Structures are given as structure tokens and as C-alpha cells.
Amino acid sequence: MLLDPSCKYISHPPVQLVDRQWPDQTISKAPIWLSTDLRDGNQALFEPMNLNRKHKLFQTLVQVGFKEIEVGFPAGSQIDFNFCRQLIEQNLIPEDVAPMVMTQLRHDLIDRTLESMSGARRVIVHLYNAVAPVWREIVFGLSVEQVEQLVRDNVRYLKRRVVDFPETEWVLQYSPETFCMAELEVSLRMCHAAMDEWLEDDTQTMIINLPTTVEVSTANVFADQIEWMHHHLQRRQQVILSVHPHNDRGTGVACGEQALLAGADRVEGCLFGNGERSGNLDLVTIALNMYTQGISPGLDFSDILGLALTVEECTAIALHPRHPYAGDLVFTAFSGSHQDAIAKGFKRQQVGAPWRIPYLPIDPKDLGRTYDGVVRVNSQSGKGGIAFLLEQDYGIQMPRRMQVEFSSIVQKQADSAETELSSQQLWELFTRTYLQPEQASGVYGYQRHSLFETSSGQEIVLDLKSTQGKHRQVKGRGNGPIAATLDALAQHATVLSYEERNLGQGNDAEAVTLIELSTGGLSGSYFGVGIHTNSTTASIFAVLSALARVSSFQYK
Ligand SMILES: CC(=O)SCCNC(=O)CCNC(=O)[C@H](O)C(C)(C)COP(=O)(O)OP(=O)(O)OC[C@H]1O[C@@H](n2cnc3c(N)ncnc32)[C@H](O)[C@@H]1OP(=O)(O)O
Ligand SMILES: CC(C)C(=O)C(=O)O
Image (cartoon, rainbow, N blue to C red; front, side):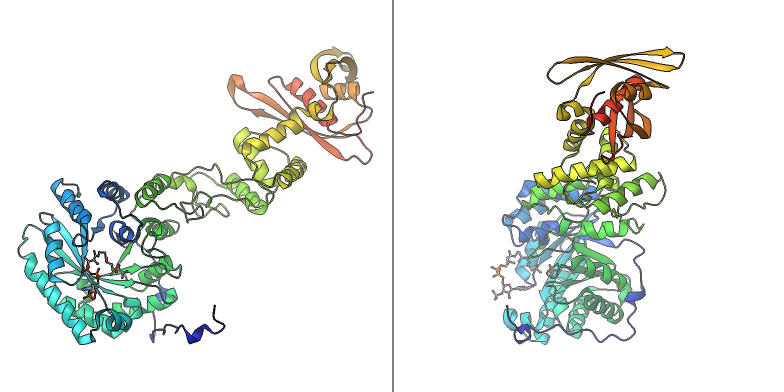
């Protein structure tokens, strides 16, 4: 890279706009959407879509709710031409959907374009030509006057030719391509030329579509350009002001949003931002951004993963795992403090109340996604996330100090494994740690017990079996089963906390006992867990579990 890039790259000049209004505006309703997946998206693929893929994507776009769909460049390819014919001849275009077809300013191409759409109810014909200085000079070798003449001549030609197709309502869309790089006066002049030639009376409307063909400035500059056009376009009420942002600087969606603040009525783009180079504006992201502000976008993304699969299949381009709203990882928190906040959010969130879950800008369920994977555990995770997964997937609710204890065990495992731990792996670790502690510690495990009421409390006879198959029997007394079991097994142990909960419901319900014991000295406290259909047995298991985890534990 150059130490001084200014000797090679010239910064794009800002717009001298006095009293700009758009920064104080808010988006309060959805614009008219146009999907150009089948044209701009299609012209950017290694392998343009065949007829089957075009049909599949067209039907999907209709299902999502698009009312304007650019179906191709029929004068440029036989596939696009055939696709247009099939849409019409097989009556595949719903009545409330307008197809759009694009063509250059050439009479032969305009003829072919009209032919491709012959018989349709309503069609938007999209004429474009580049207007910025570099294109005028390098690509066309034309002066501004000559470019204007090209526009006038071709719009006039189109107007003359559509008369031959009276069964169709023809709408003109004119795009001054490279608008963002052109002098505003030149773009305006080309738009006025197209409008002069096309609009017959004060009631007819047409679309003026302003693209960032290649993004060259920050989104606020584009917004200024749109606001300038919004105020300078004559017969503004007869113009549907549209924008067509690309994403070369990664700000396609920002340009679209700010253009709406600046007066645009319509937005063009592609699903998931497919399109030339870094793509077109991502229609899914911009629409869902609105949705998260409480504004219905008029597009339905209730099965966003199904939609992503269809788009991946049709374009043969994989979606990035961090793609907004649709990527595999976008509703996943690995880091401990995020997981903790999400878990707390879920606990507080009430059905029907405004969505207030930290780190989740939208409810994944609104997009047909699940809460599976919202929390995933690796070495960056903490107690909150681990507890969340064990509760969500296995119904175990750990008290706070136990969360701390178990998360340090998980942390060691995640550090040594150097990978993510699945919820099932967490459960296996939990089982090894608390439910089969004798396997790890080698102490005796439970075989059976008998409990007797006596005048001074309860007496227990506990049969134990070592991992090598050796049996032993111990007896103890106390004012309840826990005290009696402790008396039978330990010299000193104090119960610091005890919780009993139900796992499952009805006949299959089991009791879960969580106990925290201290055997004194420096060994601190240890949690133990017992799960059994009988709550007394679960308590005895929990005591055995906790004691087996005390490294200094000796039977009396
Ligand atoms: C903004 C955009 O996305 S632009 C991309 C639009 N889509 C496509 O290009 C895909 C479909 N295009 C095609 O199939 C072909 O390019 C065709 C059929 C339109 C034209 O094909 P060809 O005649 O072989 O020309 P070619 O592809 O080389 O295009 C360049 C020519 O088009 C001219 N041209 C470019 N844009 C326009 C325009 N809007 N109006 C008129 N002429 C134009 C160029 O000046 C150049 O002319 P020249 O050959 O006299 O120098
Ligand atoms: C709207 C048209 C001309 C376009 O695709 C572009 O400029 O990117």
C-alpha cells in the first residue's frame, strides 16, 4: 500500500447542502421494495441461473411479498428472454406483482425487451445509462449534451414502440447509472430529459432510480445527494424516487436507510446482499432493521433459514455465518458476560411484553429460528451460560455457588479441549462430576438402603459397593435421612445448603436434590446431586455425591 494514497486516490467531494433535513427524520413506514436478485444478483454469479433456478427464486420472492421484481435483462441473454416468456405464457406472475426488465439505450435491445414481455398485464421497463465523467469520457466518448440526446432519443423510441403492445401497462424506470459519482446537475438533467419524453400529463408517474453503482463516499454524502434530487426534481409528485445502493464500502444498507430519511420512496436490492462485486443493498437486513424498530416491512421472513437455503441453492454462494439475522452464529453468545445477560433476560421476559433481552436485537423465533444455540460454551464462557444450557436442555437449576463450582470444572475441560463444548458434553461432565462421583473418586457407591423410625429420629442401614465390587454396610442415626446418612458415613460434615426440585412432570417426574456440604478444615464446600423418583433416595444420593467429591473423605 502507498504511504500517501492521496497521490493515487481522490476523495469524493461532499454535497454543499444548506439546511439539510434528513438527519432529523426517522423511518416510519416501509418503502416500495424491488428485488433485483434475478438481474443484478444474477449478472454477478460464476454461473448465471438457469431457468429452473430463476423460477424457484421468482416464486420465493413472490412468497416473501415482493410486489416489484426485476426478472432479467432479456435482450442480453436467451435464458432471460425465455424466462420472461414462460412467466407470461404460463401465467406465473400474480396480479399484484409487476415484473421489471432492464435494457440499454439501444433501439434493437429495446425492441427485444418489449417482445420478451409481450402479453403481460403491467411491466416496468428499466432504461439506464452511465452519467459520471469517467464513463462519459472513457466508456462512451460523449459530451453531456450527447448523453442527454441519447436518453431523449431512446425514451422517445420506447414511447413510440409501446403503442404496439396496448394490452400491457408500461411504466418507465430511468436510472442515471453511476449517479453517486456524477455531478448532481448532470444527473438531474438526464432525469428531466427522460421525464420530459415520457410523462404525458400531470397524472402519469414514472420511477427515477438513483444508484450507488460503485460506492465512493460515506452514506451521509449519498443521503445529501438524494435530498438534493428530492428537492430539485420537477414534477416530484409524479416521480417515485428510488435508490439502488451497492456495497463496495460495506455501507449498502446504511445508504438505503439514509436515502429513505432523505426522501426516497423505493429501495432496490438483493436478498442477503448478493450482487455485483461486494453486492447490492441487502434487502433482508434493511427490512429486518425496520422490523426491530416496530415497523412492519411488508416482507415476510418467518422462515429465514429456509429462505437462505433457497438463495444459496440458486446462487451457489454460501451465506456467511455472521450474516445479519440469517447467519448460523448471529444469535449465539460464547462469551460469559453476554451469556449471563441473555439468561437473565430470558428469565425476566414476559410473553406479549416488549422484547428486552440483552444482546439479542430480535426474537429469533420471529424468524423461525429457535433458542438452541443462543448460548454455546467454550473457554470464553462463564457460569451464566453453562447454567442456562443445563436448565434449558436438562432441567437442572443450579444454585449460584454451585454454578461457580461447576463452571470452573467446565472451564478446565474447555481450556484443555480447546474447542466448543456441546450441551450434551456439558451434561456428560455434569453426570461424571455429580451423578457418578464414585467412578472418579473410587469410593463406595450406593447399592440400597433401609430407613427406620425410632423414638429419637431415624436410623439408616446403607449398603454400599465399591467400583471393584466389594460390599460394605454402614449404619447411622439422625433427625432425618440426610443427618442419618451423614452419621453413617462421615466424621464431620455440615449441610450448608439444600434444595429439592422436580425434574419433569406427572408419573415420570423425578426429584433432584442439590446439597452443599462442608467437612470442615481447609477443604471448603462441595456440592452433590441426587436424582431419583423417590425424594428420600435422591437426598441420600446427593449426600454420597458430595462426600465422594471431598478428596480427604474417609469412611468412619
Ligand atoms: C448497471 C449495470 O448493472 S450495467 C450491467 C447491465 N447488464 C449487463 O451488462 C448484462 C447484459 N448485457 C449484455 O448481455 C450485453 O452487454 C449486451 C447484449 C447488452 C450488449 O452486448 P454487446 O453489444 O456485445 O456490447 P458489450 O457487452 O461489449 O457492451 C459495451 C457496449 O455497450 C455500450 N453501452 C454501455 N451501456 C450502455 C447503455 N446504457 N446504453 C447504450 N449503450 C451502452 C458501451 O458504450 C459499449 O459500446 P461500444 O461497443 O460501442 O463501445
Ligand atoms: C440501477 C442500475 C443502473 C444498476 O444496476 C447500477 O447502477 O448499479
